[in-house]
Length: 305
Ligand SMILES: Cc1ncc(COP(=O)(O)O)c(C=O)c1O
Image (cartoon, rainbow, N blue to C red; front, side, top):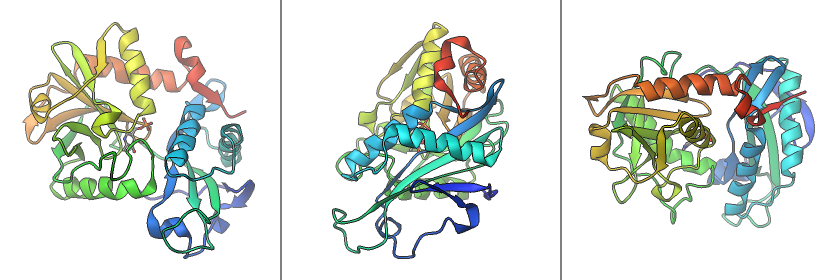
């Protein structure tokens, strides 16, 4: 998806013009994939732009860095304020926000311990990741031939840049085969997640989403969706899913900050009723929640000014 430039990018404590936010070609993380990042969305609300679950995202970024033994030079509070400042500087009512921390220029070789850590935060307008009508029309999924990396290869709990080589291989494979998105199984053959979304499967009124132990990221949207589903009175739990569970489910959706709540209409050419009634109810409530229109979820909505 093409990027639309905005005014400023926050780099190591300074607001830098978009065109000047550059790094050296020998930046360590560019070569070895040891960066951590977040994807957040600012939504237009009645009280101006607000970043949905900003503090939770920045906290997860700190956790990702802990897993990589990357010392973060800025606190959660500092990065929360910097994220708000970037969105304010853009003047946009709504946008996607991308903080990234990476080992910087100055050292080469796989030992990250002597490396400096740089942090940047950018924002730009970004539409629905899986298409504007993904919540209603649904997306076609393919189970990937690529296996999700596991806890002893690349820890899935860390949103590490290098982890996304695995996701990109699966995404491109699915797109080239004519599908919209890939579903990934782990090395035990259990359902893990999609390339950039968590998955929810409903059967006989029970909604299930795979755990972190299956190789899924602990999604912030996943948590929001579980909360919304339970508040509706739906039975919703974390649990194991097999490939067959996908083929015989009653409804299915995927969710993430970029994709929001997107229905699934097919897995491996097996049709799924779409959008199912629970999917529709959850997707509609999520859309309202992120815009600060649901009182019980207002604490998730963090205004930028
Ligand atoms: C691999 C992967 N799984 C799941 C998600 C969904 O996470 P979240 O809802 O926190 O955006 C993402 C997005 O960050 C992701 O990259």
